[in-house]
Structure formats: C-alpha cells, structure tokens
Image (tube, rainbow, N blue to C red; front, side, top):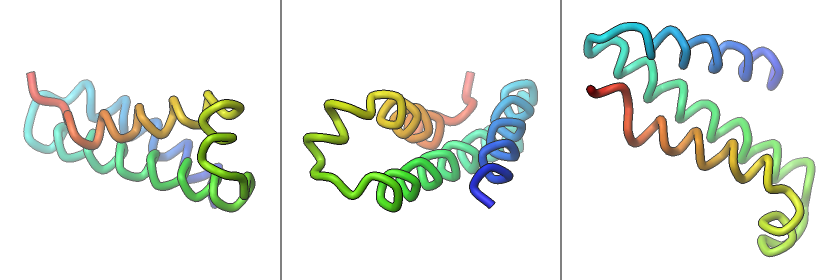
Length: 78
C-alpha cells in the first residue's frame, strides 16, 4: 500500500506541475500532503527512535517529509 501510494503521489505531483490551472494546484497540494503523510507514517512505524536520532541519521526521510510539506503548502501557483 505504501509503495503504491508513493508511486501515485509522485505521478500526481509531476502531472500537477504540468497543469497551469487551479486543478493542477490542487493536485500538487494533495500529492504533497500524501507524500508527507506516507513518509511520516513510515518513520513512526519503522524507526521508533527519539526525534534527535531521526534528524541525525535519517536525513533522506526528513528531506522527503519536508519536500512533501513544501509542495503541500506552496502548491503550483506561478
């Protein structure tokens, strides 16, 4: 389920970037929310460690989470 969600979120994010309309903006924001949710749930389930350990040793997951939040908050507005 997580792999399917990641692939679907990535394709939705790319497709939303090509559409210059409010629909593209909505697609980008929904894809960003889903990416952030998937990465956050993967971190909670897979790495039950303190926040400091996650920030120090899981930089890729933190970067993916922040990227998802960026697209969720920024959207596709030109």
